[in-house]
Image (cartoon, rainbow, N blue to C red):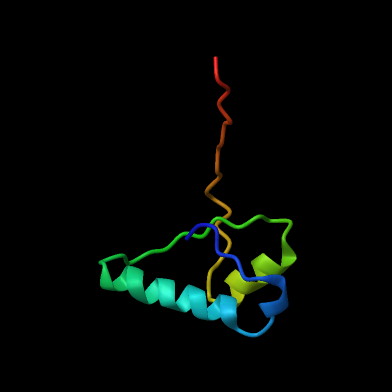
Length: 71
């Protein structure tokens, strides 16, 4: 899952968790059996949400990124 966001004034009401659950259901219906969430490690609120949803930190996988510049 990528770019899950809840407006600040709607946080801590279960909205994020319900969005995760809805996404899981839809992905499962489409045949997915595993979900990966990209989560900023410094965002304590996001980390707490994904842990509450049952996701575990995968210390064996690293993400590599590169911003490309126009030539």
